[in-house]
Image 1 (cartoon, helix red, strand yellow):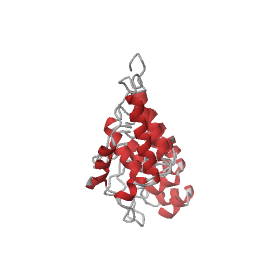
Image 2 (cartoon, rainbow, N blue to C red):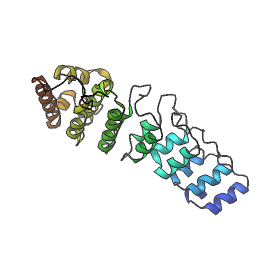
Image 3 (cartoon, rainbow, N blue to C red):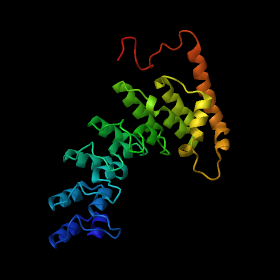
Image 4 (cartoon, rainbow, N blue to C red):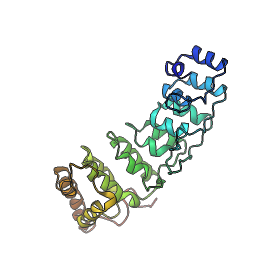
Amino acid sequence: MEIAVQARDETAVAACLAAGDSPMDLNHLKIPVLFDALQSNSTALLELLDAAGADWSTPYNDGGFTPLIYASLHSELTTVKWLVERGEALQQRTAQGIGVMHVAAQRAGPEIAQYLYDRGADPFTPTEHGESPLVLSLQSKHGLRLFRFLLGCYRNRGRSVTAELLPCLIALFKTQRDDAVEALQALMPLIEKVPGDAELRAALGAPENRVANPFRSLDATLTSRLSRALFALLKAERVARSCPGSWPGAPRWQGPQGL
């Protein structure tokens, strides 16, 4: 069954099912073979397994990734749509509080996150470790488009980014990503209070936030060219807001009539 599914051979899969194989049989990694079908992105195969009694609530492994959470990270949009349209719950979570938006936020583009959000998925709730989709998007190599999309979710819902501010800034400094300045520029209009250098340095120096790279010390991180650019951008924003009339005391996405 595993080989037939991975080959996207519908005839061979149908023959395996007719011979008594099950969509819940384990592959060579001890994972239900239905997850191989999710990676195949073949709705025809998914329909075959569904008709044969596939259980779409079965977790991938002890991590608790359901088929929808798994597909939101690994599969194409057509597969995610197939699962959602058959009624899989958008608000499902693992024991660690990871949901579809947390994994979709780590993709290369916002298409799946956009679809899930449009269907009602929650883009704000953090995991049990306090990581929101917004923060997680900064851990993706190609996450700037997703980060901007998620910022738009906050703007559209009138949500504050205060709780995510320091985690986002810490992620930008720690990852030293090439687009960090662009990400900070996108974040800036939603910041209600710009943190000072001392507050940010203290947060970066906290044990839980220290850089994991053994070849980059905290001092090297804080003094890199990119970090200096980030500190300069934050300082410029603080100075601009200190000028009379430059900061009306409300987030920039909140117009004169309020939300």
